[in-house]
Amino acid sequence: MSDTPVRPGRPSARKLPHLPPTVRGLPLASALRLSRPSDTWFKPALSVVVASAVPHLTLLALGRLDLVIYAMAGSLCALYGHALPYARRARAVAGVVLGMAAGLAVSLVTASLTGSTAVLIAVGALLAAVQKVLCDATRIGPPGHVIFTFVSSAALFAPQRLDRIPGHLALTLGAGAFAWLVTLAPALARREGPERRAVARALEAAAVCAADPGPRNRNAAAAAVHAAWQCLLASGRPTPVRRSLERLVVHAEAAFVAPSPGAGAADPERLRAWAARTRGRGPVPTPPPAPGTADELHGIEAERAALRAREGRRTARRTLLRSLGPGSPLLPVAVRTLIGCALAGYLCAALGVGRPYWAIVTAASLYQANLTLSWNRTLQRTLGNLLGVLVFAAVLPVSRISPLALVCCCLFFGFAAEALITRNYWLGSVAVTPMALLVLEFGGAHPAGELIGDRVLDTVLGAAAGFLAATLVTNRRAAGRVERALDATDRARTAAERTGADLAAAPGERDRARRKLTASLVELREAGDTAAGEWWQRALPEQRLLAAEQAGHRTLAATAPRRGPTAHAPSIGAE
Image (cartoon, rainbow, N blue to C red; front, top):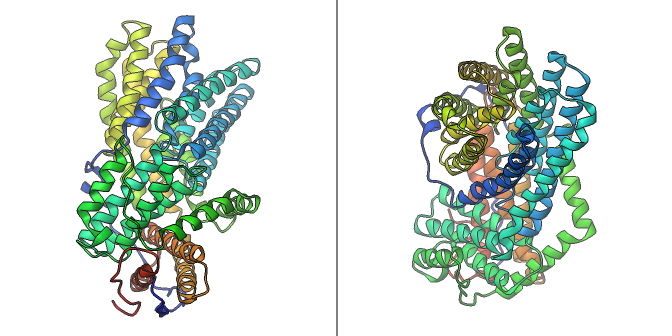
């Protein structure tokens, strides 16, 4: 860092103007467009197959395939946590298993105590809303709440007796424990794998920004660098590999805050080469020393220790509770889920159509961060399910050859769903739908025409009712989240400027202030994108959002010479 004081350049902290509400157009073609598959698609795909195969084949050998749904509830927990470092993954997947068992227990007890369809639908809708808000608050996912809702809703409408519930839950917990082992098994071969992938993504994003330093690329690089730091902070005690990864993130951060193509760490080709080697199985590349790196690594270790301390854990719990409080922006989405799932279930029951839980799950799967994304998911879910029933009709004769053939078909579609869903949700739904229908075959054969007809009608009714609820329940808190994010960014920028200008400030303190500013910019962009996709709210202050982002990135760039390899950072006053 240079010793030149940082000149503040923050926008006014005035409240958002009360502009008239707007209705935004809804996309069509873009919602169905295929994207590149995730770089880790095979990890959840292989994990869920392994986690499911052992319980399924064990039940097959025992002649109790009728219990597959309870084992599947635990096996599906293997879908979670693959982006987390193993230390945090162990806790997160354990929480998923317990949450899955808790939701299943509520469903089983309710099903054993009442046969009232009205009560069962109400409980299913309430569970879906609770599962939605908890998954969003803890940011567990993908796949988020949909798997929980699928299991709990299906169990609600299955015949049940109180004396059998402990055995069923024990089967779920046993399969869940095995799924926990499956998700953690890769740590035996490559314990820093998640951290390496997170840092590789940060280097790749920084390379794109260095080559083309536009606002979109800079925001993407900020998000990737922030995610890499969070992954490293949660990864446990430092190791030589993690120390090297931290040094690489220092270079990635310096490259995106003040990109200068072809110079030092801002060389895009050099960053891409580091990313490729970091992602690979060989040694992590060792970057050249950068001014301030030792200080930043010391600051990272202090921050990691603070997060592990009792006060740090208490602060994290308070933050989680605030996200679930009365003013939470998650509550309107939870209300949408509750009303939409209940409306879909009661509509299906009133029309005497099929299985209400299919409609409940369809409605629950639609609700995303905003109305535009929910519309996209409505199109994707509907198209995927309609194509999926055709696939089911084609494979049903094969699945009925033998019980082993049925198990193999379910395992195949479980793998295919995870292999395809990262390209687009509708493509993954083409595989999810036949798998969900084949699960019914474990309890006995059903007429194919009845299953297909019910699934089509439940899909259409669930999607229509779910999206109707999304349009009727407004989320005006999204604009309030933008206002809070703007204020938080303003405070974080002020703190970064103050510590950057304070010659007596410890290097670790300056770096923590910079990371906090980066995190606030990521939250600001997320809040802006969420609010931009909502209906019936006052127009967003686009100019103020842009000014806040520009000022934040200028602050990052102006403080970069004090701790990174970039030697030509623009001043705060420069545009």
